[in-house]
Length: 79
Image (tube, rainbow, N blue to C red):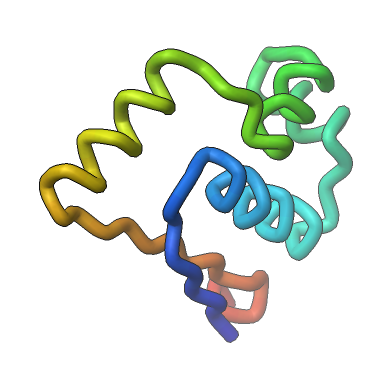
């Protein structure tokens, strides 16, 4: 089964990423290790921590009428 959500802000992107991580049975620490980063960095992404890049990206999306969606494919989808 696949789950799709609209991405409207850094916070919504973080929530979707968190759900994808949880559906894949990964802790923040496990995901961080796979990506070669810290658990804190994963936490910050999932929390939608403000950054200049993300703020400008979502502002540009709003100004241009762009929409972004994210799809989470569960393990069943890969089999």
